[in-house]
Length: 466
Image 1 (tube, rainbow, N blue to C red):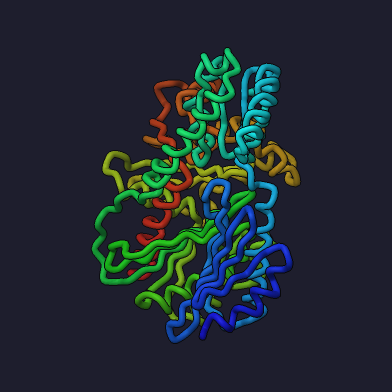
Image 2: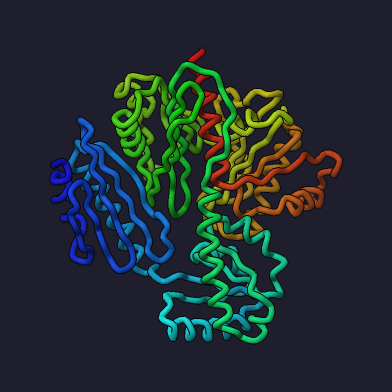
């Protein structure tokens, strides 16, 4: 049985705290706060799928798959899965954050709510912060509760915390310290949230593209805490299968090979692979953190030699701007700004008269070469949760784009800057004349991923034609 080949390394990685149960072709790893699952598929070669689900909120915190052929590599992935599972030990309670203007009123209410939750045996843990610390602390909580006096920030908070449940505390419940009423309110809202979260996960419809080639389009999207690699198989321009790998630590070369091995085994062979990555691809090498990939590695050559198909590597914001461009017919001149969570410096991509601008050295839109002059190089992540500093750098980046490109529209992907009207006003305050301002569109991480997969497929087809 194929599962027997993974049982020993899984047991070795699990340790004493995790209960392991063999169920034939899958192995379950149980704790009181999370569940891991190892699925083994014998398809001529053995494909292993790993996942971890947090029992507090039923969210998938880890997912990947790989071909079982190298036991040291498998052991490394099992260990990463175990570490992710064990890290959820301190997150078994649903963490809720109360927020008001100063934090004093909500501090008292927090104590009352924690007492009520303990009395009712609810795994809830309430904390409280003043509003000026919300955007620094909020990402550590599953539910954010805004006091009535700051409820006018609700839309802004929803945009910033798109994968969190943001609620406005009913004024009567807040004024009367109605803990039972607030707990019922949260429970009902969470039930509705799970339904809308599934609806949001449905991919946007893609435009029809005529092609005879089967393309595997892959988008690498690092974040400061949990990174993702989304991929989609296009058969003659039509999407036929999608997956998203969720990891705490990216090892780009190894992760991409695991994806390509699985796709090769489980679906039809692809004619080419398009890979969208952060930074600047240079002659097959990636300009990424050394913890993600060896800078000396020629990734393009490695993958082309192994899979015997063309590999096209593109900056992921360039891919996203192309995907955005082809899904609309209103704009010909577009500036796309991407600011991922946990980073201070954004990236930009440019379409002029319907054509992607990459430049002589493929660095068009690498706004960091402007922003490095405005901040110490070794401090580029230090202010990633400081709203004022993020606003400043994004505003500077857009002003540079407007002055050089004069776009019809600026597409902004940033959880920290959701209000486009405030952004426009800041640009006006920074001496950009209002009549010269383009339109602004805000997009979320999932939308950028969708745009980038489609755009990378198109750029791969264009490269094949050349």
